Length: 495
Image 1 (cartoon, rainbow, N blue to C red):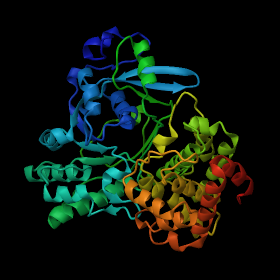
Image 2: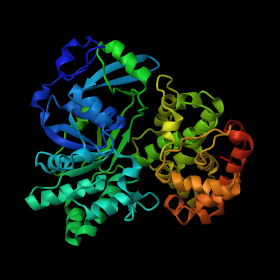
Image 3: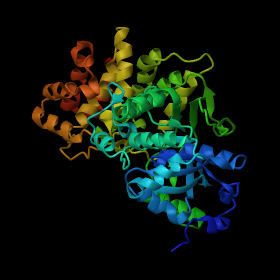
Image 4: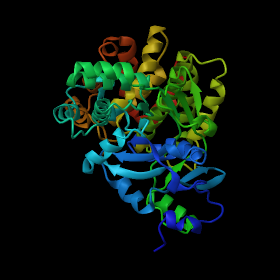
């Protein structure tokens, strides 16, 4: 058994491995992060790590709102973990030290609320995925019937949800005369700062209208755009990194060289100098957010559903099929780009070219199944917003429709060979019930799924310009499978 990565073993690392260039003992907490998953550790925590040598007051206390797995992995390592940056040219390793400790929220509610209430905490950030906001993806409003919302309103001192923790911590700070922290969402939500502000304000209103007005008036929720591909860590990754380090790391993270963070600069209590580590501060994030959600995430979801159905395990495997690469290139250029309105200095052509290369990166084992998770929460942001913009211009949506149809085929839970698909989704039970009632009929399946207003709203199911192409694509997927459908589709779609 090799020794474990920790503060005590940092000196044992090979010289080629980067490590914290600051005294971790001097770091104090300035940020509480909710949702300590792989993306946070490959993105925001790295930007924080970059600035701690100049300003040690921005250390992170991270919290898991559900599982103790990350805490169990990192606690024996004093919060340290390895960042692996992989490309076709090789691998570079760096040990990140910005996370001081990890709290498992269900086991330590008071501890987490205490750190969030501490005056030294000036930012509470989140990567809890779309479903973690307990909102209706079609409207962006708080889902007031969500079980966690109902629980947290009835038990405000023992919250379960991210909105519940944030609102209770803000209430305690207000009662103690402590200025509110900035709420910094780093999730793929449209106008994510405004969305989280709307969710938190309504949550607070339901407990106390005056407190709701305080949240609306006094709590800053800047919007952000985050971009980095972070596949799930495999046992093969752990073994390879262990051999290079000469130390055991229970949970390293693997990512690509590319990273981007665009942030609306509204931090009343101060912020780290993230611009010195490459972040871009702007007055309006929305154009960049649309760019990323529609070009990267929309393409990713389309690749995930079609690629999985075609039997491809990873995005790189899918992109190695020339038909899929042509489909995604056409999706970006013909259907997504016309809906984007970027600042003059933004180079969309270069961004799209880089995306294709990132998707084809053979060193990243980004599984199509992983990207396909939680589609009911992702579809409105990643594909349907673009669909609505195209329909307003009476423009074609053939490639977008194929992506939506592939999601419909995927959520039946049965693949093209009759095998079981492990569909991970907050609405998985309803999706499967809808598929069962359809009895293998693509027409009935489409009709049943269109009726889910939380996903499609009230407008799209009534518009034959949407339902027609999606229905046609779904019937083709049933009749001839994803691989053949994609190959034929790209030859027939309109520009």
